[in-house]
Length: 210
Image 1 (cartoon, one colour):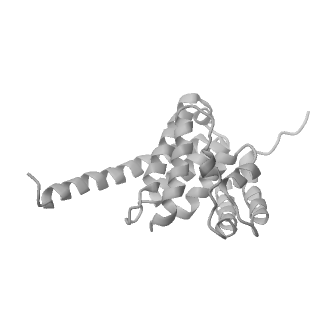
Image 2: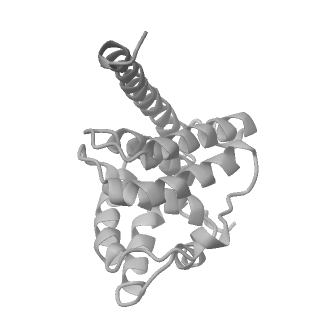
Image 3: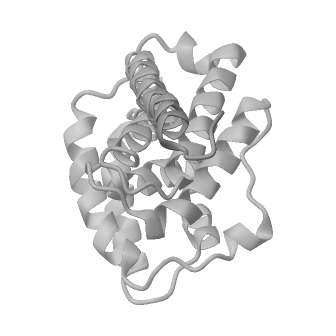
C-alpha cells in the first residue's frame, strides 16, 4: 500500500517560496504565474492578488486591473466553466518587483494559515452548486475591488472574501468556505451602506432635485 500524498495545502508556502526564487530577477506576466503553478494556478493567483489589499487602506491604482482579473475568473466559476482569462489579461505585465516583494510575504502568511487549513466539510467545495456560489461571491468581490473608491476597507473586505474562498478551494476546507461566505455578507453589507448612504446624501443635497 503506497503512502498517501500530503494534503496539497501544506505545499503552498513551499510553492510560493519556489516562485519567489524563479521570478526574482525578471519581468513577469500573469501567464507566467499560471504556467508555474500547475493544477492550482487560478485559485493560487486569486490568493496572491488578494494579499496586497488586506489592509484597511485602499489601493486604487492596483485594484482596478487586479479586480478585473478576479471578476473574470469568478464569473467563469459561477457559470460552471473552467477558469480562463483573455490573452490581453494573461499578457499583462506585473509591476517591476511586485512578485519579488509579494511572494515571500505571501509565503509567511500562508505558513500561518496552514495550521488551520485542512480537508473538512469537503462537500462544500466539491458539490457543483457550492462551487458556483463561490464563483458568484468571487466575481462580485472582484467588481467591488476594482471600484476606485478612496474609502477605508473598500479594498480590504472584498480581498478577505477572495482570500478565504480561494484558500478553501485549494485546501478543500468547507469551514474556510463558510468563513468566506460570512466575509462576503459583511462586504455586501458595507457596500450596500455606501450605495444607499450615497443616494440619500445625493437626494438631500443635490441642488436640482425635485
